[in-house]
Length: 121
Image (cartoon, rainbow, N blue to C red; front, side):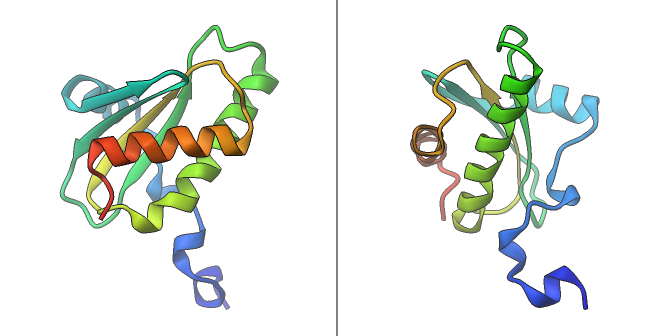
């Protein structure tokens, strides 16, 4: 039995929901619209696809590798929890600045940016 058969598919963050190619990331940075707030910036490019794709990037001066990886994991989990309420067909970059890497703080930032960007259904 496949994972998608056992669980609701919205609960996973699958590989096809990630932006992996450097040229695709550059395209979103250059052509997408952006919204920012202290701690996070969101770049959104409409693609017209069936799903949203996302990538989570920390700035270079974001502490050591452990801190950067934790920040990406926390923000990725926030995205995973929100993605069921988003309209499909967008490529999204979440640029993370140093700050409090607790779930509550990052979730509030993510919800506010998604609401401002108009990604909610």
